Length: 362
Image 1 (tube, rainbow, N blue to C red):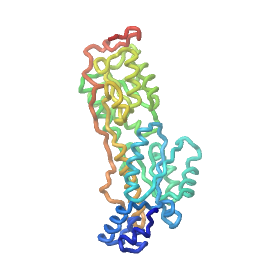
Image 2: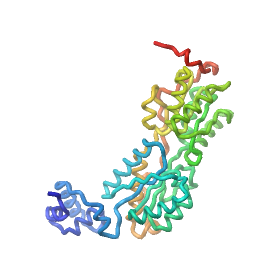
Image 3: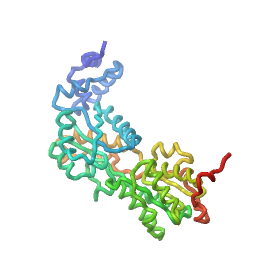
Image 4: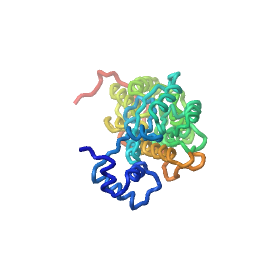
């Protein structure tokens, strides 16, 4: 038979209302009673019916993740982190993919909040970077947390999880400079994202710090995709003055650049160094494995959910009581050096592409 809240109350020797308070993490329960109820829940393997809880009371027990990102790895990592925090607090997670270019996005989120009885929202770029959308959510009186690039705001706000893309990109570019590269190409995409601007800023700042010239001919805009990396790298490597290193705005672009180099018989890293960003599975599935910046998306998702839940449960709302500062709100992706980057070739002409028919065998 299915275990009910009555069974838990009987085993713990408390009322049903007390069990409900423990499940909802309400503060008005003695620690010893809370422990006894939790032990009963664990012993009976009791799983509360969250849908029934949502319908029975005025408080919702669901938060939603809003995203528009083709990178499935990014979304899955965020989702796993958010789910861990939700399950610890007895909440459900609603996954809501959407189009940032939709003219009806404001109405869409309005219906989502009202019809799904959402207690809070987690917004990812580019949604988290739309001021007008924040105004809409404020008017709906729903708690939300934004995951966004540090370049999107002048200061860390109480409802933000920020990622310092610029400093991470600076570290990657400086790594290439320290390897002796003086002509470093940059492939990027998604100019509508502040993270794109942050990574470009870090790249340019590193060139400036090394007193290297900025050549617009080897800085190409595209998309955050494998195919864009193939196209961009091919264009640069077939030029009269190809770069000796390529920095890609994410690992998918970098993997595409690596594929293009392989098709052109250019050895990596002996003739060409390639670095990516984010440390997605793409960076570990290539040969050679990609130098990149580790962006802890699962931890970012968990912190975003914890912040959202604290905002929901703060007495009097965010204006009167802020969530604890113990929640990590600022992340800087960490440089990870792998086999795709090496010392610059002594002669730049050494990386000149060869026809596919010249490919070595054996």
